[in-house]
Length: 329
Length: 135
Image (cartoon, rainbow over all chains, first blue to last red; front, side, top):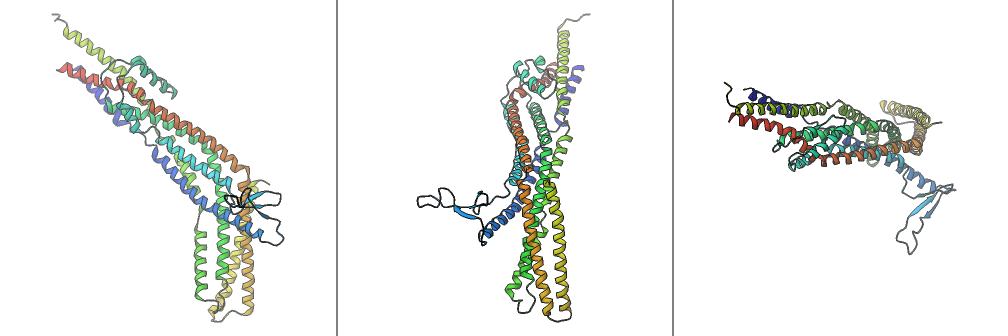
């Protein structure tokens, strides 16, 4: 009866381990942040295009201005009869050569936004690295435990700061109980993943937050540029309809169209997406740090279970010995 | 003058330009509404005034375009953008190492599962013992 109770308790412990510590889903908050970064990048890029188009237009305007000191020339090794292409460039006062029509006045700002997107993508890679499927696949290949394998676990566990001395406890037991070790292995990789994400987001937090403020300033200025252009077009289209003769259908349509474009420019809030991105990053950090690190407790329980099982085995051995012994009476 | 000063000054200038432009728009609207309300066409003086106000408004829009474009260029040219990019690049380098580490851990998981099997098998052993004892 005593043996039965102990065995049932051990089975109950296994059930508790598996059911009580659900595997943490890290991919969801990370994926949310990655999506926010891509949405913000798309909006930001559109605004920087407005800026580059404005600068390109200024280039054209200046080239056509009487007494302009700008010069337009062929790019080296182009536009000759034996050349494979023909490209122009503008020579600015001071001798700087700028590709004609290929203005990129916002290169650094775009590079910063690109790095933020890359950052989100790489966090996503971490969240998806070592998937449960690959763990299960490895588990399927698992053979009976050996001392060297247990030592490998001890080494890895110690790297993560967990006390582990499985090597000393390893014995030659039978076939694996798959559900349990799949779960435990998943938990182990999840722990590595969680620590990597915590460390990565902590390091990137300052440059990320400050970089976002910087990009917001640029996006707000780009919106101002866009609104000014749209307002100017609106003025030209709608403020010249003063007499009945002016109000012909074509001009009225042009006014309505210009008003609609101004409406779009005014309604756009590029800084909102960047604010949302920053909030998403803050939320991600909060999520990563509030997740219960149940690996330590789990690890302790596993080792405790091994220890307790060995005791049970001893008791069983004693029971068997006692059962085999002749009656003492 | 730092880049922050430039951005702050541009913001103030933009607000003033926006207010002036809106005031002009209101004045034009007032003149047109007053004439339309009483059912008369605009007078020559009113038309001249509106033309001048429109020209002023367009000049302010041009000024706003230049101001905002220059602000963006100043932000782009400033070392801060590069500094943040460099810092993020460094962080991304670490992330890539992390991905490799995690993949390595996942590969080594066979070893992990083998050893964890030892613990899990104890439970099975208990069951076996239980069964053998009760058989």
